[in-house]
Amino acid sequence: MEAMDGATPSDPGGAAESPFPMDSAGSTSEAEVVEQMIAASRELPPLDPADESAITLMGLLVEAHAHLTRLLSAQLEQACGLPLSWYDAMIRLRRSPGGFTTMTRLAGEVSLTSGGITRLVDRLVEAGYAERRNCPTDRRSVYVSLTPAGVAVVDEATDAHRDVLVRHLLLPLGDSERAALESALRKLRRA
Picture 1 (cartoon, rainbow, N blue to C red):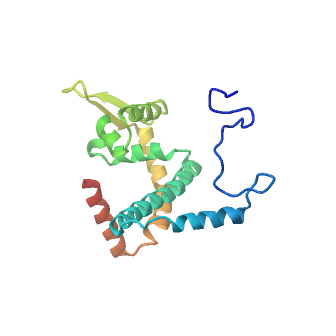
Picture 2 (cartoon, one colour):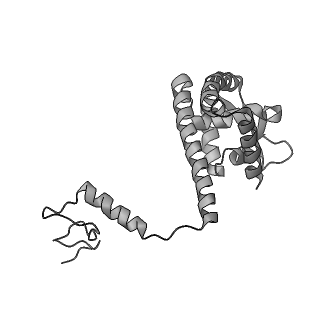
Picture 3 (cartoon, rainbow, N blue to C red):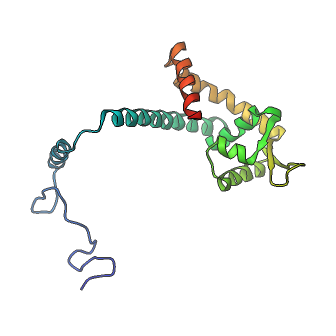
């Protein structure tokens, strides 16, 4: 008798047969698995060199971002109790002309959906770090700005944040490398 999910009484998990050899107990040794994986990878056709270069660059960018994000997130939480997502939004508000921006613009700058930025700003407002203001000339636009408490918190967090940025982003690169990286990232942001 077969169950609705494709499992049978003799195979309750409905699992497919393993491509790796198993011993009489039904297990495969780690060495056998590694050997099989190496053999299988030799059968793969190589990537086109142009694809390989693009994939490598994207992979390096993602890995560097993930590494820095883990370091920065842990440091901000430890030093200030501030989530990195909050800091990211708050520092953008702090640096905005006049100290405010629209919710739509902030969402684009921090790569959140309109629903995501609404939830984030809700939390900042509840914490007393931000406030919303309606645009007097366009009822569809809502501005967000930091409160004095928000400015104080983001300034404190920036002091702690700076140490990690200097140690893990600036010091490993020479002046010309930093300038080239900044230039390249600005080009990619506009591409």
